[in-house]
Picture 1 (cartoon, helix red, strand yellow):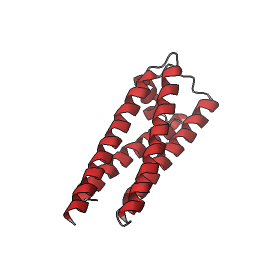
Picture 2 (cartoon, rainbow, N blue to C red):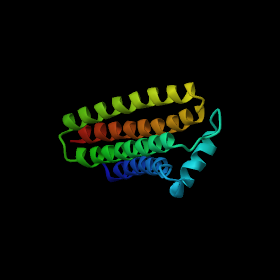
Picture 3 (cartoon, rainbow, N blue to C red):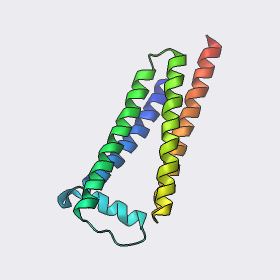
Picture 4 (cartoon, rainbow, N blue to C red):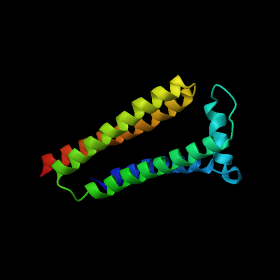
Amino acid sequence: MNGKWQAQMQLWCGAVMVFGLVLMSGAFEATGQAANILFDILDGPGPVTWDPALRFSLALMGAVTLGWGATVLAVVRGTGDMPAAQALALWRGSTAALLLWYVVDSALSVATGFWRNALSNTVLIGWYLLLMRRNTATRAVSAASS
């Protein structure tokens, strides 16, 4: 894997992790401005009720999203030293997991009236798949020149 691809993937992972932090900000009233802005952008089917259940849900979703971004970052950093077949298997599994997230999260976003979230999911998965395509192309070029 080349350094440019790794840098781009690290940027992608950073964006996911920042989104996790935005979600986590809603856990407390004192830190919730970023989550408040997010809900304004998502413009769901009704007013936001900042009750303990929503705050807990945002804290939990934020922590999971932060961990998800960190996990993909660990894969980015770890696969560079792996044999190509092992790295490819790990990336295929990671991509399948991300596609599962995309389908479920986007379908539930639309079903619950937060369809704009499905749009941001589409941008995120499209960015990821573009980077994966570039990674595959880089591996093919490297293998052919060896």
